[in-house]
Image 1 (cartoon, rainbow, N blue to C red):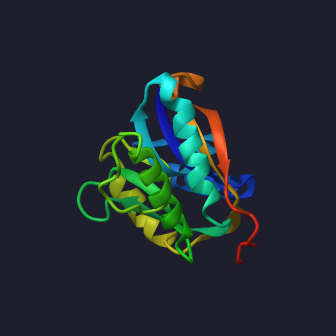
Image 2 (cartoon, rainbow, N blue to C red):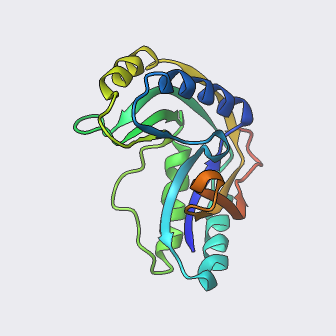
Length: 195
């Protein structure tokens, strides 16, 4: 099964991001936009994992999550990945004022690495994917519009859990990807998240 660990985004923020997507889509750029119900912040992509190992992955994710106090995240601006060179992804930035999202990533990565699964070789750049660029058609117009939305603030929300998802390619509406919850790990909520 194809697995990843993510933070869910509040419905209010998903609605605001979807409204921004609609403005961007009006450029007619060749972008596959992420459906609002699929918006999330990926913490760790695992790829293909044997079905029998999913419960151990979930246990390790839950243990890692329990070591991190709940924390706030902010969603701000619209940009692109990579910042230089051919554009592949349209994103919104995720800000973690006290960097707990980075600590969460490190603990999850280390726990899963202890199973012999690959660890990340790159530093986590927290973001929320809004769309994937399919071709250069209409891209210049889209990039000019991105500059106007660079500082948009979509909101903040408390992070109290991480979710282990299975990604089912082509199983959603119209052949889109569908995500199924395998399980979740709760963060340490004994410490109140700072606003």
